View 1 (tube, rainbow, N blue to C red):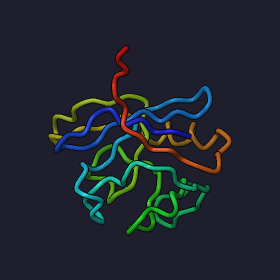
View 2 (view 1 turned 30 degrees about the vertical axis):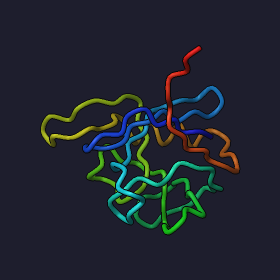
View 3 (view 1 turned 90 degrees about the vertical axis):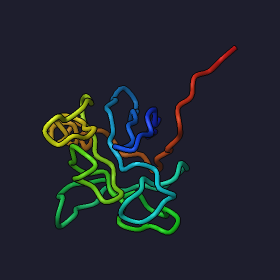
Length: 132
């Protein structure tokens, strides 16, 4: 599984999650030096496993994040819904009422993601255009 981040803003971080033929968008907190509860996690390769969270239900647990714990991929539409975790959605845009970036249909997208075979690792990287 791979997340290619394509937008770092003060409102949040957007990416594309890729897993075989499945893809979706992701929302995370802005980058703030990997600070707990206010920052997205660093790029890298992390072991992952399915996890039943008491608060979020079926999730994917991202493990071995330096200086962090309890990082999940779970239902979340905006940075206000997460404390360092990742929310999946089928599209993204600006949520006018909340004045923030958001992904849409997170609950449905999470169910689709969990229907896929969960690999052993998640790679998070920054997308950058390739020039010849």
